[in-house]
View (cartoon, rainbow, N blue to C red):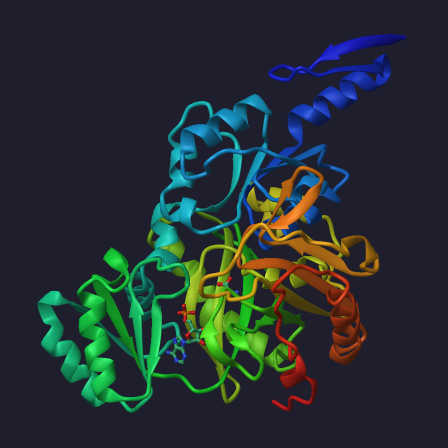
Length: 458
Ligand code: AMP
Ligand code: GLY
């Protein structure tokens, strides 16, 4: 027997076998996921979530040309929560995964919790207070101080105590670290070798160098070591540690030139030994979650620990309340379990029931960027060669859009190519070989992703 089913809110008619109708209808009602964001991280998240046989539809808002191949893009402004609400209701979304930090810092989780129509929709991310771990460096530092979490010593300055700040700088050794308190699109951290320059930059920051984000500045002791990004998924009680990754932040080979959003990643990281992970759990993860509980912060989401490994001891450089980009592109390919189920357990506060498997292979991710990035660059360059990339690689679009039948560049970071291998060398070879297949005018990338880790001895 056949019957026609109309999906509310959609002009779509499907002819299906009657027996399938209920199953499909229930699936459609219960298992629609909306990923918010438009970068490589969101493409990787949507790609992984779409693999779940428990998920019937993945929507990405606003998405990019790559996310359109794993789900349905919806062109809305995600800073406008009413627009997000309309999408959630129209497409009967059951779970929302918030990719970037801004909507979290702006309180999207609280918006959901306080809205009668949305309060039962699962949402991955902390509430607005929890998002302050990323939204305010001063808040994060005070939080770490309260719970004895290892981090660089620091002093917080505003225009009112500038002189104290200048004196504090004199007590530190070079180099000097100055951090804008608020979100500054990844540009708000200055590291300066010279004291006179550091003092002058401090004054400039307080006078609005990064707008209101630097009305408050955190001066930090410089930590010497090697960085790693670790990712925790927590439901506020329990937690799961996702694969770690090393990010390459500078634009140029050998860590030279300007800071970027991230030019590549390697996962796993050789110095993240079981012993190192234990230290991170005992000294950082457990006290962080205890702190969140004590402060009644509703946190069902990712905690991204930007860590410095100082001679085998982990220190927190920063908390982020989201996954890293491009780390996510190389981390998702290493998760061998149903990630949607893991997120679902998280949102339900049942992470203690979760099990997940990690692929032991090494992933290397190479980010292809627009010429000129991270300074000014051209957009709208036609991208070719995507079909020549080996299906053994994973291609995540970061800054692309559809232009008629073409895919064109639409951002600084354009496409991330991830390959797996039994070690870094093998994964590097595959990633670079395939990254070369993709072409667009001005294409630039780092050639040394993972090189520093190939012979790393902790
Ligand atoms: P953040 O935005 O806090 O991650 O800082 C950007 C980058 O600055 C980090 O990835 C580090 O490379 C560097 N950095 C930040 N804080 C420190 C510190 N206290 N010591 C050394 N390097 C730092
Ligand atoms: N890759 C660093 C970040 O996402 O902040």
